[in-house]
Length: 344
Ligand code: NAD
Image (cartoon, rainbow, N blue to C red; front, side):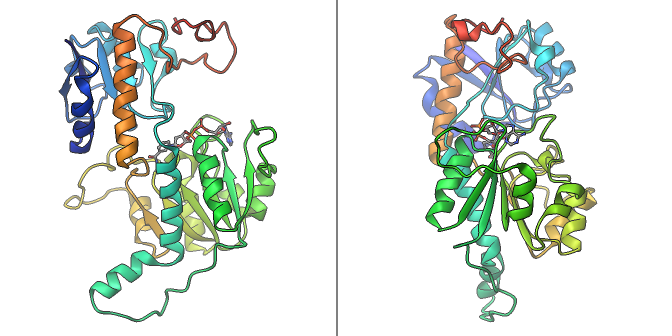
């Protein structure tokens, strides 16, 4: 039986991976720490390492893994902005789970928007204390409002369907618009100017880093709501904080935060939080922060375990790696994957 190791393990990960491992003939050694240059030595002797969104998979980590025998990093997530692909190329293959449940993430985005707009987070706490006052709990109808969706991939499209169900006017921006989709595409600036609500569903890249910043916020309507279930660094958090204080941004629903790595997924309730920007943002009545949990449904966890282990099994059985990603992917440069081979 092949054995793999697994970083940043949480109890809910183990449930689904343990259920599935026999089917793939794979045993798993679970490690609690995140993968980074300080912990990479733990993977010594493991050909396959399973990693997650807040692991630091930079050149240093990759070099340590490679020297110690690792040849595959299996990301158990869709996003891969935390991997240095140039450092990995030629040494360690990287696979991911491109799709596990776009519904989980899109539904969470709408859950955050509904909760914040209708002040459910406030009402829940009030009624537990037998405070039945409605003062300060006024929301607005989503029906008829313009929602700007940035990124019309798998999750963005499900979110658009949900918004259409609410009778919202949906506009979208994507550098690769989908032909004949019926989606009303506009320029990014137009989206910033026209939207009552902006929801981010694009990957974090050099182009999208801090796309919500002081300049773009200036273009937006006063009172705009921002929803981010994608990646934290799409938003310049300091600019967001200033705009919330100035009441230019009317509400922020954040499942991700640019400096989340050391905080999210951990119980920090007994620790003095040093990040003043996050502490101030969380203190706002018109902000809801969840801890990168948009993916957390039974269906998504089941699919993540299944696809990750299938990726690992393909690696062990010398099969093509259908979910491999490298720095050349999508750029059309001598793509071996399009010929049904591994990236290198
Ligand atoms: P996807 O690849 O199907 O879609 C991404 C879309 O973004 C594509 O249509 C692409 O053309 C578009 N895009 C690329 N560059 C862009 C730009 N500069 N501006 C606007 N759009 C751009 O990905 P997906 O499955 O829909 O996931 C979207 C993102 O959601 C992921 O990148 C990931 O960061 C995030 N995510 C978060 C969670 C969570 O738990 N919070 C879970 C899964 C995914």
